[in-house]
Length: 605
Image (cartoon, rainbow, N blue to C red):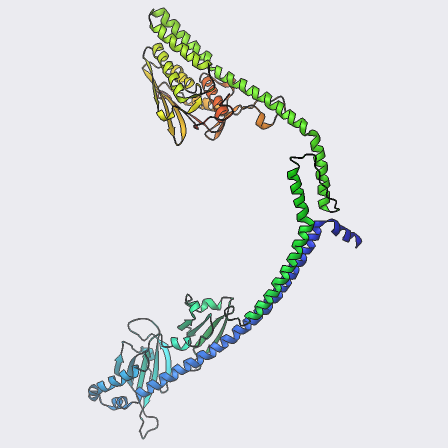
């Protein structure tokens, strides 16, 4: 027992768990007892109300029946009707107006009374007053006692209607119970709605009347159940209590459904009980919150504040003296800070040194990529000058030499970043040399939107593409050829497009060329301590894929394209796209898109 007490004292989680479980168990017990008690009360109340409504419905129906019986007898035993039964057929024609007058007075007594048929003892219809009601053949039986039934009597619709059968006997006769005939009174389908509706004294209640065949005769519900069309859905609902009875006149079934919740008569008692439960729960919760704050929340807050302060004062330590988990955490944290302080300066110096080494290496690599363009271009240009000098001793040599001088100066001087306008001027000079070189066989068309002129871009982004198009696509072509250079803004991005109508690239060669750029090649760093973000950038991302260039695998097309892709990666990271499409004997198209800014840090180098 002492060990258990010590374990609880030293473990704050165990303490909190015991308190929480105790509160939950007490709350569940009280709530369960309360709900069971009031559930019994509510169902008992609903049962009493349903029986009351059922009794009231029976009385209402009896009252309606008695009223109908009185009205029917006042008509059937009126002098005019009795004389009409005793008259001969021709006399009945003359006295029909008297019958109509009696019927007119009768329907004023009951608004649901629509028609009456008069039958003699042989079930011959001797008179019909009111709407188009008829008596089906199966119902054409002379009644000797009063009867109230429901059936489809109306010729105009197929709703269930009511019929009251009144046998008419001769009042003064030598024979016992000498019957003259029968009156059949027809009432519309709503004749009993008011009778059963008046019995709904409880809220959330509904009542339905069915005949012995189970046909629905009348249904009424309180205003809060107007959307309910049948009592069947309420009977199956657990929130309603239902009961059944029968009307003593003709054994018709009466069904009553009462909402248990809407008719609870113990609201105040229920409220008091819930208040007690609520206050007990709040008190227990307050104890839990207080205990949690003192034992757990406040120490954790102290540790959090300490972690914020230790950034500015690395020598500061915690001073929490406790035997539980919080004290253990505080001691371990002090030990961790002591050990961390010993190595933090060594790590910081190592990271700075490695970063400077890698940054220098990247700058040297960038310079090598850019200068890689110059020898290829100079070789071709000097060959052109030599050929023209041998063939012609003219001033054209001076002009092409001046253009070469400007191109060389543009390539080797200045920073890595120029504006689009400078790049267009450079391509104009390059265009002049190409046109001299090929004597007009190859033409270069340059189209650039003026809004792109001042946008920064990496130097020499277009020349390698045009050079590839000329010497790999058009030089081998027998006919004239052209290279089209387009610079535009699309969707907020700068778009460079170089298209030629040269010999194109074979499908297999194009696939091999793309594969050489898409194959990932990683350089192994001899210093394993360099973090990932400090490693050299040798992969190029664009159009949703990584492209790394292996210089040893780059063929005739690869040198220029590889150079451009490497520089795009260095200056734009993954914010560029590079697309090449070609069809043999049709031409080649290369599209590069970049943002309207250059990556900070590299742009200023």
